[in-house]
Image (cartoon, rainbow, N blue to C red; front, side, top):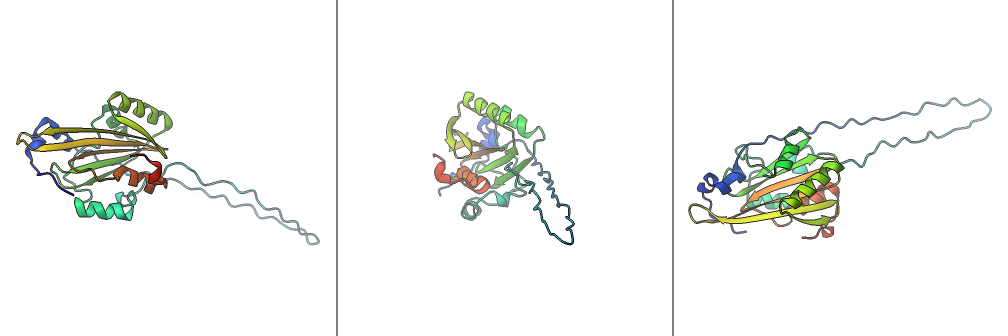
Length: 219
């Protein structure tokens, strides 16, 4: 992978909003799990009649927020990221995972969110947030991204939305930045990147978290 020449002056330019303010990740709240024990049955001495208790469903298809960034990637993608642009979660990286006001409002609302970043404070890296949403929020965000000029395509778990920009820094260095958002069943994955867009990044997260074959995802 070819890296673009890094120039801190990009961070001072308007295009440097990609590495702007800090956004702390909310830790996921534990999901309580209940268990029901069937009452014991007393058998008559002469005749034994056992009645099997009716099982009570305890499993749910609701999306469960991962507890750490290590859980959101496949082994291959994790190895690629560690080799190409370490470290994971450098505390100095303050880039938002989106510049869209509706998306930022959702993330900042207190909704359970996991934040993951790759790279050091520079003009080369990415930031990802995974935030729990409901269907209505997903529809609102999808409409907002479409209105903001994002492309849209269906994937196995919902939809994926992308936008990309290119420009020149004050030092006449080219740069590329963009956002990719996955609106899935129960969660949104928001990713903003600058000069670092690993191939299949969002698709790998989809496959890892939802168990959806990336082949079902176009692009």
